Amino acid sequence: MIEKQTDIIIVGSGPGGATVARELARSNAGLAVTLLERGRDWRQHPLYGTYPGAMLYADRASFLFTQEGLNIIRPLLLGGATSMYCGCAERPLPWWQTRYGIDLSKEAEETLAELGIAPLPATLRGVASTRIAAAAADLGMDWQPQDKFMTPQQSHNGFDCGAKCMLGCRCGAKWNAAAYVDEAVQHGIDLWTGAKVDEVVWANGRVQGVTGVVGGQPFRLWGRAVVLAAGGIGTPLILQRSGLSRAGQGMTMDTTVMVYGQAPVKGIGQEPPMTWSCADDELGVLYSTLIDPWLNYPLVMLQKGPAFALTWPRWGHTYGVMIKLKDEISGAVVAQKQGFTISKGLTADDRQRLAKAEAVAGRILRQVGCDPDTIITTPLRGTHPSGTVRLGEMLDQNLQTEIAGLYVCDAAVFPEALARPTVLTIIALAKRLARHLQEIGD
Ligand SMILES: Cc1cc2nc3c(=O)[nH]c(=O)nc-3n(C[C@H](O)[C@H](O)[C@H](O)COP(=O)(O)OP(=O)(O)OC[C@H]3O[C@@H](n4cnc5c(N)ncnc54)[C@H](O)[C@@H]3O)c2cc1C
Image (cartoon, rainbow, N blue to C red; front, side):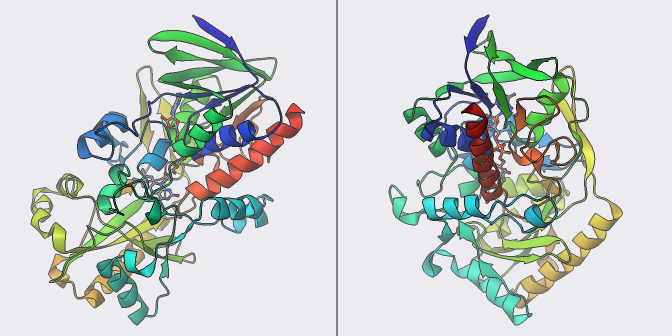
């Protein structure tokens, strides 16, 4: 048994955990911080950003499904899901303040400036993607260039971004939470990769540490505070195993489909993902420009039926409108003796709203010039597993659980679905929590 004493234990190195670690490390609070990440650092590996790579570092080789058949990509590596995200940024929605009394504007603006978040220049937004935004404008919609965690001038050998960017960024333009971990390590935090946390140890209502396994060896870490940032699936599983059985009951997913159509001209597959977006908050959906990477296309379509997989040759001419739905809280993440199960269906209201959004997407694709007979909707998928340890229900305003010193800081804390890119909101929440931890550490 490996044993160690520290001040603050952080579990998970996605945007939540990485940001708390970096902020604490850069402060002068003098706190000893240990960051535990179950995955490894793949960034320098030759397979990083390739199809085999994505199978190696995503949970269940990228074939993780809910009981209802929704595919969830769950990256398990340093940087968490930012290793495979589309690099989109969206400011925290006003309801964090109006409904939950949490003002994240300062932290978000600070991050926007620090990371140079902005839309890609017009010349890099993609000709075909821009055609979708123009077609939507013809129909009276207001699509806007999407803010990006991308700095094209930082690319190693030229900006080379397409749908494959979702496998992992190989050109270096996309910000990844692992960069914050690097900074935290430079400032002295202790990083353990390959360290999977099983349970939180607590007694008399106060946290004491965590247990887990690293390199096949059990470990026990003692600390004054524990921050769970293992993601919308990982965090409720740890809490359930630690005796907090309400965790994981109900979740949000920003359930997503893509509506595809084939046009006579080149499609959007070689262009950066999600360069233009449009939110309809009355309907509770976000539209954006996106299609699946080349090899994922037939696999995704196979779920719908063999005939759909056979549309693969159209990929190069495919235009896609992604729809993210603000889904209602439902379903559950449940720890099993071996592994876990996820159930997440759509409510009747979710289905009605999704059908309306699909009709809108179809109109846009016809306006682009897609053959109406080729317009199809992909199977449902779960892109943002979240809302499993909700603020206001299991967490107070400081993201603390009923156990003193035990905090959660990741997508699990969302009190309702965002139907927006999540990362900037998670970073802002993490900066706010780091400030709180410094204050109580002083
Ligand atoms: C394909 C794809 C595209 C996306 N595109 C965007 C986008 O453009 N913009 C955007 O804002 N969002 C996007 N998202 C969503 C976004 O990336 C996630 O919502 C976000 O990264 C969640 O952050 P997190 O801190 O909650 O957890 P994660 O990023 O999931 O990180 C959790 C970390 O915890 C580790 N972990 C899990 N369990 C344990 C354990 N027991 N012990 C130790 N470590 C553990 C995991 O390995 C992982 O590294 C996308 C997601 C995907 C999959």
